[in-house]
Image 1 (cartoon, one colour):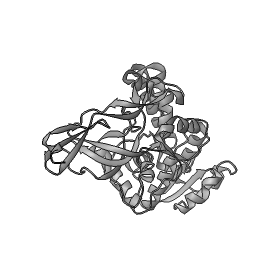
Image 2 (tube, one colour):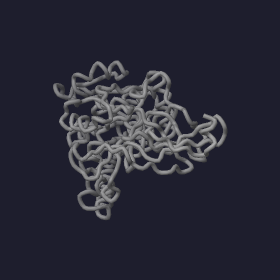
Image 3 (cartoon, one colour):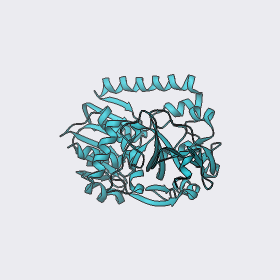
Image 4 (cartoon, one colour):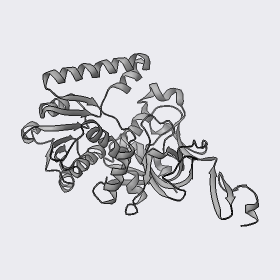
Length: 369
């Protein structure tokens, strides 16, 4: 080994890595290319291509290179693949899908201080990132990663951050929920809804949720005081009283009407189904973005004067405070997202097809070798 270390950079013949030795005994892998799931055009699962020669960009000072061990499949991934957000992503093709990741740090930028090479981490990218996590090596900024709790596996960790940060953005950053408040989650059976229930319970709130019958026991076990089967019960009748905050993960006209009717004056309604991307895709960013802004402002004013509540479109956003709290709760066993299916990254098309056809309702995770 010492003879090999005489060269500052040694090209590995069996992988797209180099070894950089600045000091004897300290090895640093420099990744130049890797496997990644690439989308060259929008469409069905068949447009995804697993390539083994995708270039890995150089790190910026605030960035971290992660050797991915597991990545989860989010609804945003399948929608992006099909063309959702094309107004943003069309000029950036080819893109790499994926938001969540769990793995090990293999390199850090010069200004990174909170993470070190060899550390196990998990985190999530912003929804608009064009180079996603369906790859052997993933680049994220330091503030989008935290140490992975040793008590959970990479598969379990990869299922958590994007969904939990979406819920955190709504409940903590927007509604600013506090202990003792009543929180309603429409669609508590999904990953974001289930995360929201657990986050609200951890904050000391009284939580009610709607869901399908198969999710009721799990939501009650997670701390929800009431879980209503929306397929067989009248939600407005079953959900007694009024709430301080409502997160609507379904976002259709009926769920919006019901949630707003159950809010107190001064309460917050938040939906994941904002119209910014869809209008920008339809009319272009120059027209669609101002149109979406106008629609949002109109709704905000309408509900403020008619019901005395605040109305929001909510999206995931990287939040270091939220990510650290998510890590703490995950380590304590108070925040988890069940994984229904684990597949190798080589079966990414099968995973997307199963989600498109609703053959798998719960969370799917892709493992990397």
